Image 1 (tube, one colour):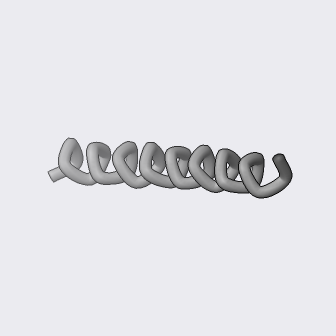
Image 2 (cartoon, rainbow, N blue to C red):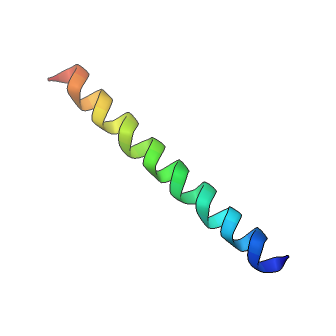
Length: 32
């Protein structure tokens, strides 16, 4: 169970980073 929870945490962190990255790209597109 611990391994599963760790996997879930890393997955959510990765998704969050991806989301921030996409947001930055969108903001850059808007400014340009």
